[in-house]
Image (tube, rainbow, N blue to C red):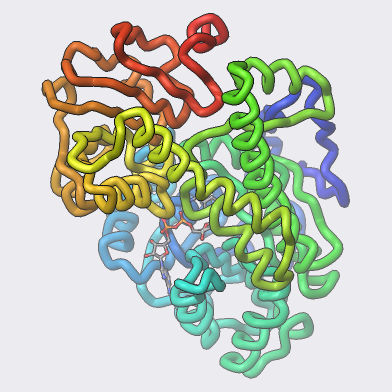
Length: 475
Ligand SMILES: NC(=O)c1ccc[n+]([C@@H]2O[C@H](COP(=O)([O-])OP(=O)(O)OC[C@H]3O[C@@H](n4cnc5c(N)ncnc54)[C@H](O)[C@@H]3O)[C@@H](O)[C@H]2O)c1
């Protein structure tokens, strides 16, 4: 049986860097279907997952594999249609298509556009639609508010509503519970349960992470915590951590992600130090991290995706003026300027210079452009008058054109004087500099081209990795 604890039992890594968590074996026996579900061990009920996207669909599939009857709710008819045909519309997630097909065939997963009806039928409702930032870098609830309003008429006595979307501290209790109360006429914490449980999975490894990452849960009342923790204990094999409050759980997610942003900001500053002294920063970081208390992340051309660059702002939204947090955001976002300044200085300006940008998604292997640093990179190159071409193995020529860059086809000879990599796609290390007779500089934004052989006239620049140090340290 999955254990529920009050503190995670994993210790700090003795090796430095990220801690690799072992997957937990499934120790659940077959669950007995009940209605209503009241949290008893060994029983399963009906759960609605609202927002069947990159995170919601794997969650829905996971819940179904543990005997729950799952209703996926989405506003996108194509998503609903795909799930009801037993297909995963989320690519790039190992194992997901197979699990979705299986649980659908077994009759445990279906999808609907009707959120209120799904909530009416469900014992548990899990919300996982995005909360983003607006122009003022304040939380943007344009998806979450309507999602909450759409389930509210179906919330009933005994319902458990769990928010998995990353939220500013206080939103579960202060913003969303009252909305649910208003529409349902019931009292949160007395008639129905409300909890927050952050989704902490890594795109591309979601099913594996679900088996390993401790699940943090905090309710607006102890009873809400208990019920939500009992739900996760019945559907997950990893440890469930029952926290003291919804706010503590909300803060945990913001603390983990903000820590990573600040850590990367520091690594980017260390890269500057390494550049000043002609030292390879990756060698230094690997050495420093052999001390058990050192967990320095890797420097790079910036931080993208809709998590790490966003969540520090959700923290700042309720606690303005956190100086280290604000500074880290500035440092990390400034990495693209630094790259362009460096390239411009080497080439005597960017106006009229043909530049090739490689890797446009926020990270290799995930087709997601949200907050990708390729966007300001292309924008600022164009503003400086450069002639910008771009390539990403996950994107079509039309998608690249929509970003304002000329699509480049792999292996096509071209007049590029500078190449900038924005992701660490493995394909880039197979690039042949002979395709580019005018090439003068390779700016390796992810330090992933350390072993790429370059003609003697081409300058290599990594982030804290210089030409003279790269091959030795990378070997
Ligand atoms: N993607 C990640 O790497 C990641 C990692 C950890 C946590 N998260 C959390 O998960 C949240 C969702 O991320 P995602 O990557 O799954 O997003 P996504 O864009 O892939 O999916 C969101 C889904 O919600 C649907 N939706 C929008 N409004 C809706 C509504 N009113 N009712 C029902 N469905 C609605 C959309 O159609 C879409 O299918 C993020 O905001 C974040 O808090 C994401």
